[in-house]
Amino acid sequence: SYLRWAEVDLAKVTDTKAYLAQLVTRQALNALRASSRRREEYVGPWLPEPLLLDDRDGAADVVLAESVSMAMLVVLETLTPDERAVFVLREVFGFSHDEIASAIGKSAAAVRQLAHRAREHVQARRKRFEPVDIAESTRITEQFLTAAATGDMDGLLALLAPDAVYTADSGGKASAARRPVIGAQKVAAMLVGLFRAAERVPGLRFEMTVCNGEPAVMIHSDAGREGVFTVEVIDGRITHFYAMRNPDKLTGVDAPRTISR
Image (cartoon, rainbow, N blue to C red):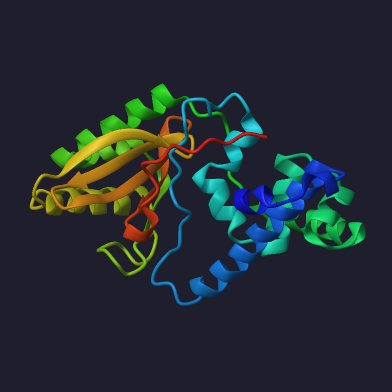
């Protein structure tokens, strides 16, 4: 988008916001449609790429923070490309229906229908969102690491919500569960097993970080990066582990991203 914008004759642009919205949105729609086609043949669960955010991207802006949370990104993936574009432009960036219509090349009436449908779809599936207390969530995540590494099942169960879920994305390119694991007992047992198996990996080490505004664990070995686990914490309990194991989706996790609106 930046390269396209750099080639534009600014003297011919009467509304910079509208022009940029159209340029970026239509490129994003093309990418989403191509991604949807590839996903039909994807092996196992599909998760969004973890985002390492720069230090300026705190949780002060609740709407923006929720928009990049892993839970919300997963919900947005269930929308059609047009619904997703309309929802993000309307709910996150506050565009009017007329502005969105210009950006995606549809009538304002069609945009209103898309916005209504997308909003209902998201509301039915979104989780309760509260600004993340990174210090508290990180403490809970560190306790989880200790409990999993020592095989402390009782300690793990005390940290997990009863309906905790573990979802792994490997794309068939790394060892990982091919289906979500649901329920605290099953998740705890699987994590203990994973950590026991990990003891055989040379040079395995864990690094605490923050991805998508939530605590995360980067896993390294002598062979390179093994994965990134993003941890969702609600009401002091871990509700979801999002495990990214697909090496193709880990290439950009070292570069902090800046988000704003």
